[in-house]
Image 1 (tube, rainbow, N blue to C red):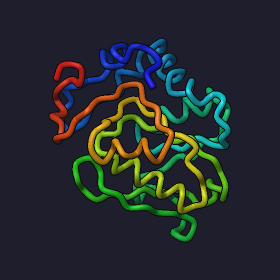
Image 2: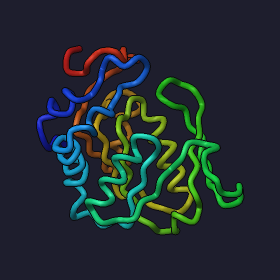
Image 3: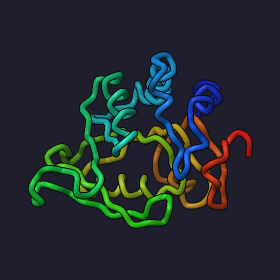
Image 4: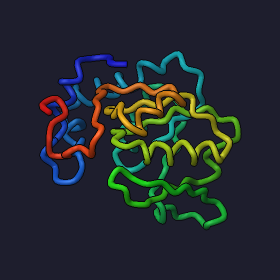
Length: 189
């Protein structure tokens, strides 16, 4: 679902970053950041859900803004080894990231109640591995992923199949069947 012209956001993403797109320029202009927050939130204003979940690091920025906009609680999901809690209070889920490397997410178990309906917010879905790890982590804790909202989404390959399993909205859709050159703008390939 495209809400505004995605070119507005593409102009503020640093596509020349070396290994991963740099989204931080989206946050410096308050009008662009506010528009982005509204566009990620808009499809879910009438959705029945309890909390917003988001992964670090840029997901924290986006998820916090959306949670505040929609007046919902926040479930911050950390990369493995970052939570200060004792191990018995941490839920963990392994996944393979967009580079093909193994990684893991962790969350404080107390933040997720069985039956919680969760809106998942993240920045970019390249291969879908990270998003699958996030959904598994939430579902293992008894939550239901009510919807997912992201800035960019690769509709090809394994990531494209996520739309069959979840209500997923994105501001920018693209199709990359091969591993994408992360230094190239999506709108100029």
